Length: 308
Image 1 (cartoon, helix red, strand yellow):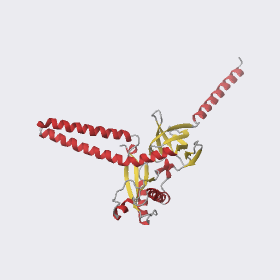
Image 2 (cartoon, one colour):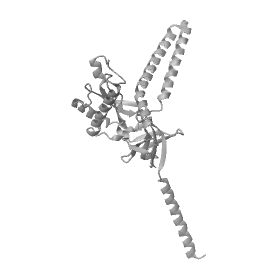
Image 3 (cartoon, one colour):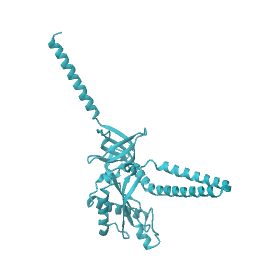
Image 4 (cartoon, one colour):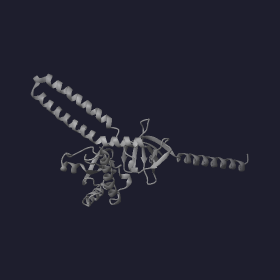
């Protein structure tokens, strides 16, 4: 074989290697899909748990398209805000992986009934966690009392055993409740503003705007923050009207945060319309009704980000 032929063969091999490398790179950049339950939302990213129990970190960008699948045959899509992406929502994600092994979302879709279920979870999560915390505090107090009794009165062993059995039962109930709600990440509350409304009113009183803007400034200093807005109504009037009033109130407060406070959409959780639920005042009195006509705004940070 001549030297010229050997050089030609070598050149062909090099070109083949370049083509294979290029094709491998192109294939790695192809689109990827993931489907699962949103378990955490931290600003520009969210985490979903797939059916095989693995976790995928999804990156959200300004180009991410969010849509709700509607229609009898699920053939139409209704464009939605990123605020609809809340923990507890079942989603399908299409995109591609970046250098950080995050799935950069090009499109995210979900079913309407899945969003409704996720909102119900969000609505019920807060009171359940409060009940768990109260039970844990009661458990700690009961255990401390029993330990004191052990030190002071050795003759009451049987009574102490019965009380200990009760403590164990309470502990099992707390652990069961923790397991039920453990799918959704816990949050720290860094700031809170409550906006009150007149009877049948949905317009935000200008006196609350400085408080809302100050809240957005504080939020901007917190790593991975999100803002939660929940609207409420008194039980005076029909339930359907009160549901709409709470929705309009939450939406109006959200608009102030977005338009005047310049909060990015990726930092906003979906506004919650709570209707007549979670009454804090006695609706039999004018003062109690006034306390119930409110919107509560909270700055939250996932405890996973805080390192807790």
